[in-house]
Length: 470
Image 1 (cartoon, rainbow, N blue to C red):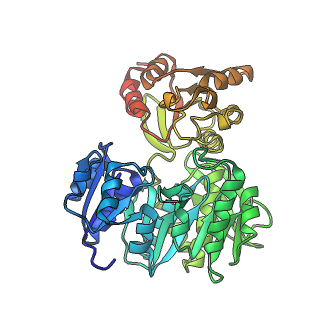
Image 2: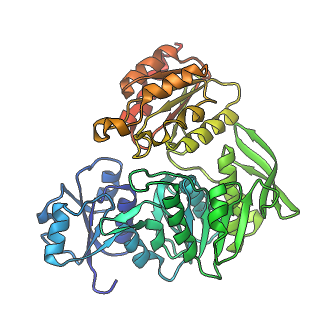
Image 3: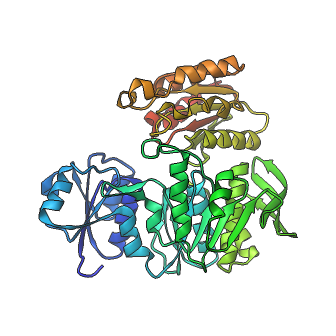
């Protein structure tokens, strides 16, 4: 952007905003930021990049009159820094507007959208493109283990973006993904979510229709044929659509599938042609779908199947997506981001396939805007049924949700017990760790599911495991 030298980010410590700050700094801009929640790892990352973080939201944070302010999506209109920004007449953008203007112009954006699977699908796309020598840029809502980062500028023509359907800013209530100039897109799934901003499934679908309508006629949409919502929305596309999935009508299709502890193997079909036997380090049917979408997108970008397979073999996964945090005394602890009932179910199913014959504990914290509300109260019991033991924690910051709208862990546990499951409600992380200490046994698998730090529960479990069965 012409004449912009100093850029200030309000709410800089969020994953997306912190990553954007790093990209701007690497691009040569003077970058500062402010936030109220300043703690590792993002605070350490920003400090290592020489980005000054100003604590709290105060008018004096804009004392040096930056040329541009980028406003985080959770920052309200009455924020004192926003008021000072408007009074001073400083130019401002939302996070997705800034990403589009500074980094997507002149690129070929590959945008991954959907209710589930965006982070893994985006990460896999970025890594396979990099391993094939394409040097893509990317900005993703998770840390890719291969890069030890959630972003990269890249010198190649392609830029991979995880397209979020959440709103953009207080002055722009449209979804972030409408700013991302898609040329190629992968649409993974469409379900109701984000109950704090969407009233129903139809509103969600409306947003995805707008996104699909952005694809130019010479663009391409990779769409999951096995998802009813995706089928409905993808049928409205102006551009060519390539279907992927397990349905016989899919162009990119998996057959002869086998699951094991080291991942998933399948025969890849393109239409009627059996192309190759593929070995994937990813577990679960949902990740199989994600991979098929990535294969279709990478082939459209000119990658050979051998290059795709080579990249896939070297993929090290994404932090907090089925991430094995450690195995102690034969007990394996896994950290995952799952929170929507569909994601919970698919993650549990994947772990049962990955660790057959082992007792699986599902430990869940209702922490997102939707999971803290009772919108999915009736769906969660079925999501947990394949787990052997289930622990539901207290609702995160329950006092912020009025009681009549609040999710009830007690009701979920009662329903699970009525279905013959061993389930319990335990309030805090320390209560859960204490319970696990008394009840874990060798060869157990402990799956932790939360979109936050869950009171540091993963580290606390790993710390106590040496005392189990000793």
